[in-house]
Image 1: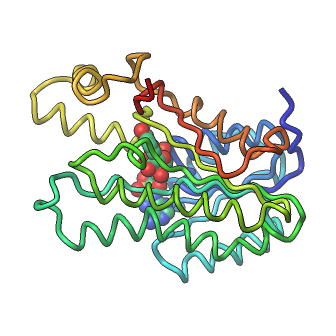
Image 2: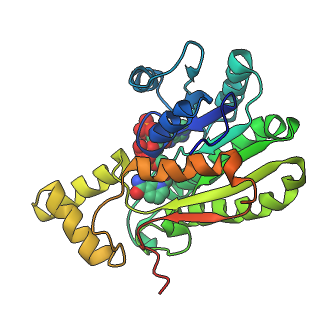
Image 3: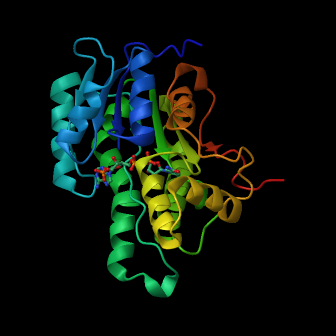
Length: 266
Ligand code: NAP
């Protein structure tokens, strides 16, 4: 399916690995000019080198979404490289601390909310005028199954992701008439460095392999993931690319679950 977004310009945060990287790849394949951003320039450059892009179609600029001046510097570099963007995919995020409420200190809460909730707000503050100016814009936040199905051992993460869902729904009312559509994607248990790390921790605790940890996690913690496997980043990126496209012209304020059923609805 031609998504009809050739020549559009996108910024993808959290783009050097996982879902952000897969999204950058799919948008490039649709003929979009892509700016990848993530924390470390070296890792970004290495990731960019793995992608197929035409001359001038791909840019990679590091920025820390928890730092306002870094985000403002990103805005400047993007403007110099490509001008105004019309697609923004916000994927930068951390898992934050694990543990029950009494085991998580204020610093753990602050850091998780600062990166996962305030981070996307900082980036949006910097780029909202771009998204509004051309009469056509797409904004996608990567939320999580945790936003609507909170697990009691990762509440800062759940709260941040629920916040994103709420902001996205509110924002979807503000600028839609100007052509800016706002949606969220909520994945569950995708094979990325984030869940690799979670599974390696579990494997170490139980003295089992990563694959065994994945199988026991699916059985014990995600019984409604009917496909019985982790998702692939490309399976989330396909939905994000659709939401960033002209084909999603009547989709606004939606939350697309990409979770194989993790959020039990039946
Ligand atoms: P990932 O590969 O770890 O991607 C997250 C990226 O965000 C990493 O490259 C990370 O950089 C970057 N990042 C962290 N802090 C940042 C900061 N302060 N400024 C800029 N970038 C920062 O994991 P992923 O699973 O693809 O995650 C992408 C998004 O999907 C996240 O928002 C995550 O919460 C969400 N999500 C993932 C899953 C899943 O099952 N994987 C499920 C639901 C939602 P470093 O690697 O350098 O730390």
